[in-house]
Length: 300
Image (tube, rainbow, N blue to C red; front, side):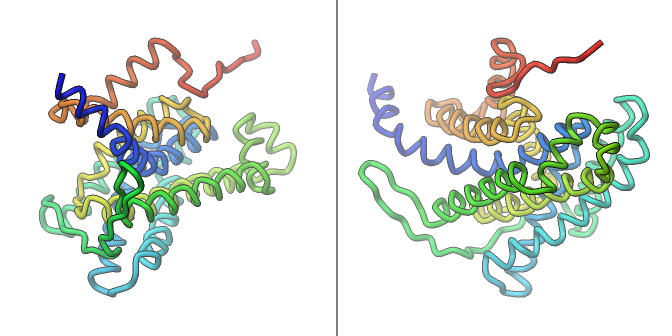
């Protein structure tokens, strides 16, 4: 009973911690959901793009002594051309193949990038991420939050709003939505489908690169395999929200982060990584299209 009372007392604090963690999941989940929405491909190399973004940020703050925002910008500038190259080399030649071929290619790219970074680094052990934002703690009623958490929430929120405005109101965003409906019709309307697909990969990679730096700053650690579990959890977040739905990916990431932190607070810390997959199974049993997904109507 005392444990339950303590859990309820800490509930507001756990929600803040969960939303912070969920915001990073949402940034990465957006890349999965956008690519799937355009070309119906699960880009399993996306977690490694996030990992390379984290390492880029680490190099910038340790070697070149830049501030956090410049490190994040550098991570984005590295991850964007990398994702475009992956799409051009590993996915585009297989676009008209069976569904299994690009999936195997995605797994191959994922393993290649993990191995490459491990070889360059010399071992798979984690490296510490230096403190780039002063560890100031603020109190608001029963809730305490650090300056790092505040920066993560502001940056992640700003990036999500910018993405929403881009997709909803810009010319390229309209082209993305048209391409997701039909390649053939988009081509007939004069849209360069290949360019739009590359732009979608680039957009997702920019968010993943920024997310890598945010996570490195938050947990103070990066390693060559960090994209595996976080990538899978972010994919779960995208499916939870409704794969192909941008608002769904945002909601799924926050939902998953809060659920994970709540599970740890309730005493299930040993099963922390299993919470995402158990939650995914539960949601899909009750609502197969995800929280904000909608059934696809296919004409015969």
